[in-house]
Image (cartoon, rainbow, N blue to C red; front, top):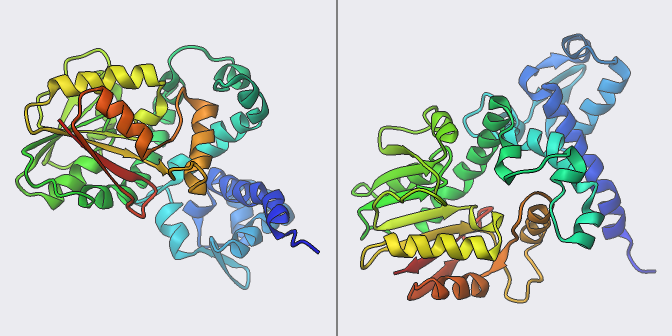
Length: 326
C-alpha cells in the first residue's frame, strides 16, 4: 500500500498553523505562565475549549504543561512573545488576520493570475497601502519583518566580502536590520535606510546610531548616493516591468565599482524547490504583483539593466543573497 502520510500531514497542516495563530492572537504567549483557570479568566475564554487550544500548543512544542500550569517553551518565548526583541509575532498576526483569509481564494488567484485584495477585502490601490491601513497594522507587519530580518540579515551580509564598499543604502530597508548587520560586520561601512516616511518613523524605534534614516520613495525620488545599494525582499513584490525600472535607476546611480545586494529566496534552477520558496511565490501571487525567481532569472534582469557580473549565495537562512556589480 502506498504511504498516505504526506497527504494526511497536509490535510492537518493548516490546523496546526491556526492553533499557533489563534494562540498568538489571543495573547497566550504574552500571559504565561498561568494555570488554565487563570488563563481562561485573563482571556475571557471557555475553560474546556481553551484547554484544547493550550494542549494543542503543548503538542506542537510551543507551551510546556506542568500539572495545570502552562508556560512558554524557549522557542515561543523568543519568537512568539510580543515583547521579545526577536519576535515574529507581527508576521504571525498578519498571517492570521490577513493572509489566512486571502489564501482561501488561491483557486481564483491561479485562474486569474492576480492578487486577492479586491476579492477578500474590497480594496483597490497600491499593494502596500493595504499592509499599512492603520499605524497598528503597519507596526505589526514591520515587527514581523524585523524578526525575519534578525534571523537572515547577519548571514546575508556574510555571504560576500563587502569590505571594499564605503556607503550602503538599503532601499526599502524597513526597520534597518540589514543595515545594522552590515555595520556590525564591516566597521568602515556607513549605512542608511531609505524608505517611506511612515516606515522611517517606525524605524527610529529599532536602529542604532550607525544607521542613517532617509525618507523617500525609491520609485519616484532620487536615490541617496552610495557605492552599495541593497534591496531586501523588494523585487519579489513587483512585476518585471517595475523591476526593470528600479534596477535601471539603481544602475544609473551607482559609481564605477559599485554594486547591488539583492536579498530574496532563490528557487532551484528547475523551479522544483525549495518548498519554502515555492510557498512564498504562491504568497506573492496572493498578495502582490510579483513572484520568487531563480538566480538565472535575476541574472537576466540584472544584465539587461547594465550590471556586469552577478553572483548568488544560498545562506541557509529564510532568504538568500545576490551580489551584482556595476
